[in-house]
Image 1 (tube, rainbow, N blue to C red):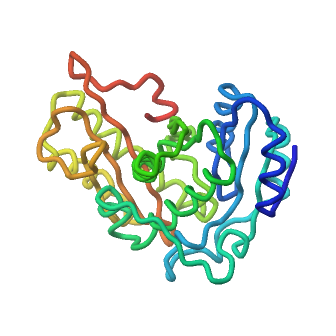
Image 2: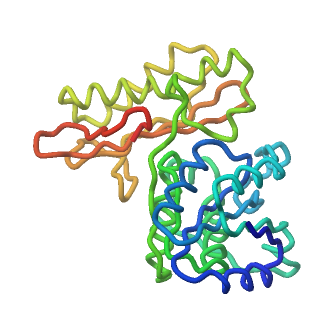
Length: 293
């Protein structure tokens, strides 16, 4: 496994890799969710590249950039164990050198939900992902369904800017109690960690209603909100039942929906989602609830 920091070194090493390359962008503090993306990339490509970069451009001034978990030595060992070929670990001044002025703004799909609560977040995401695509020139890039709006934004950006690659979306990996794996889970104390499973329970409650025939968006949102309200430590940021492509809130679910939510547990903000898809018999497709699609 080659680990490099400079862009010139990354491009030189990239040129030595013939065949297809799958890219897994990360901010480090790797967990099983990240490793599932690496394994999928390895199964579908000749080589795997991974970036480890905590992107300051996607954090607001009041967010947890300085506290974001770092474990580079451990991360590199995990990636080496998985057979990754190339890892890029740039510093902020490499990605955004002095005088840097160019950013990418995706419009409609970046505005609601996370975009509304975290102004500028997706501007930072779209910019750094575009730079990763340019530097790695991958054939495929792998993202987790847990960050559902990020997936929509990245897909839109890649299509609009004509990047010649495939965006592969992989299932959310969950703990045994349903909590979506996230680097931020380490912030939770034991009581908060127990409470955090309420996100999954809220999504399951709305899914059950959907499977039983509920198609009113307001009802699905209310079901999620009610499930969360029973936990004193949980504070709702938003609950959503939106169009999977446009992210506009739905009054009536006619062709599936993205159920998503953001909840604060103590000082930690967690997000999660279920993607509901219509079938001929109007039942939700959940091939493996353990992984929470």
